[in-house]
Image (cartoon, rainbow, N blue to C red; front, side, top):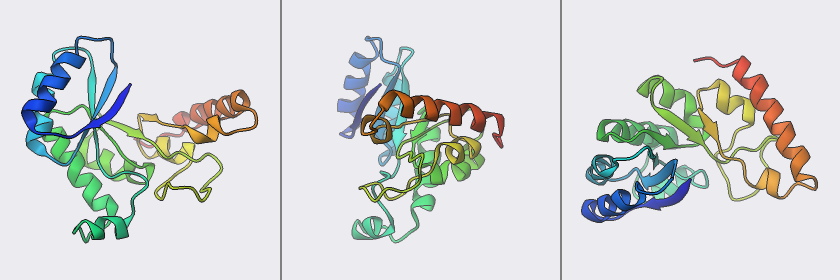
Length: 177
């Protein structure tokens, strides 16, 4: 999983993707803010690597978007970026679990949704603003989740990982899509 969030002119990103596709990489992230760049990346990807577009970082909320001149709710921007990524030939998106349901409804079942910022015990007051629990992400349509700190910072990381795996199994049994 190469999570470098490539964001450059289309030719540069295409060249990077072409070279990266020669390696045993399953997933690679690109920014979802430039349709031409995403299309160039998709066209350059001639391997088994799946491209995921980063929509709005889970550490960002509406005030952060407003500071960038985007006076809209994150979910609106995320769905717009997901549709642009899909139209460009990107395989899926990285987005908060809060947006998994709206993305799934807008893009259909074949488009991948990977949700970071998963907080099994609920919000913890860190730099992640748009977080959800394991069950919500999967029942709302996520295909995969990214869980870092709740495992890495746990007093017993293996036990934390096992508990999260159990939550995943339960959630997949209750999935709504």
